[in-house]
View (cartoon, helix red, strand yellow):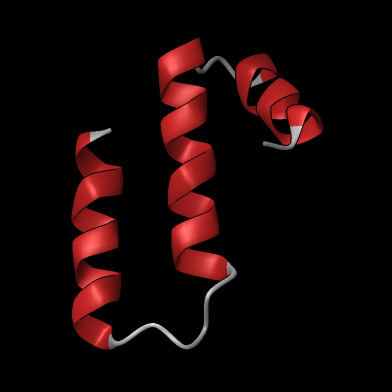
Length: 50
């Protein structure tokens, strides 16, 4: 996990668990362009509840 990104998220007011959840949501949604639409919708739902 990229500690620099986690540091930025923590600095923005995210707690540890929220920062990790936001990091994973970012990775799921933005760095995997070959995902199907259904997978993206599922990832967005997970991110919204993280």
